Image (cartoon, rainbow, N blue to C red; front, side, top):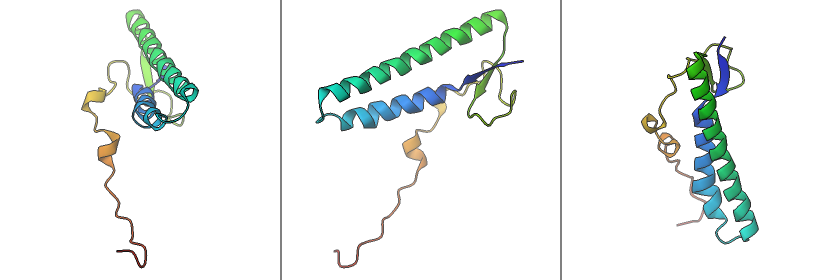
Length: 109
């Protein structure tokens, strides 16, 4: 049986959101809130690093990993260690969405 473990993309999505959108939005806010967000980013980076250590330990022991994309995936439905999709090969989320034209308000020029 493979060990279910979160896919790295879960960490990366949270980190990108916090670093690119949440943190810049706090530039004019109080420094206490900004510090909390920075601590959250640090915590997520530590969690990803710890997961990578777990993966290395499993690989050394010959244990398979089941990278999970959701809680609804059946056990064993995902590939074992070494088949995680590299983040560098993924299309950034912002590029996946097409711009949406908003309807003009009546009377606006």
